[in-house]
Length: 145
Image (cartoon, rainbow, N blue to C red; front, side):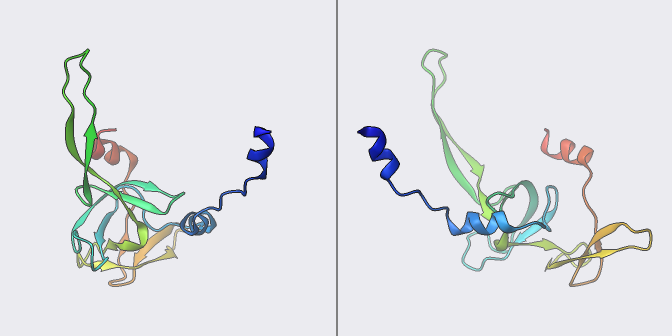
């Protein structure tokens, strides 16, 4: 009886944000990029920071020092540790941030082009400058992974 009741329940629908994220195949923002918050009513509007994490399944980015929120950690009386609260970065939707132009330092949109040697690069729409990708070794040094 319980099994038939479970099987008769309607299936849960996925959120539209997740469906949109699943349909994407290209992302301009990668880990290590410098971005600026462009959402007008966000408390951190206009602030810049480095991308720590990119969640492509949900189209969200976590930026160093931006969108901080309280995270409460439980204490363990057996070990003698107390519970405490820390400030931790929370994710933002990728549409609320823009890449920072390496020449002007202002937010810009990104296009992709091929160089003469055949390599694909990201190009700033504001100044036309090439936006370099950050190397993995540098990322490990920055974020201490």
